[in-house]
Length: 79
Image (tube, rainbow, N blue to C red; front, side):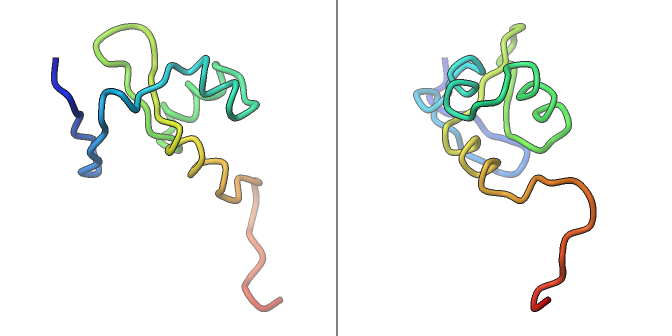
């Protein structure tokens, strides 16, 4: 088994950094189903790793949570 994974964005992920979506759900407060949806939408990095279960990283979850995820137009800077 390789010790790292090449992602679509030249992302270099270490196997030991991968967490199942159940742990990502505990960290984020989001459901496993919602996390799988946003991975499929390309809003959160994740991979199935050849099986039915999705995996992501704590760093990817933190980056996703730090973004302004509210729908609709965003206010312009300086207003």
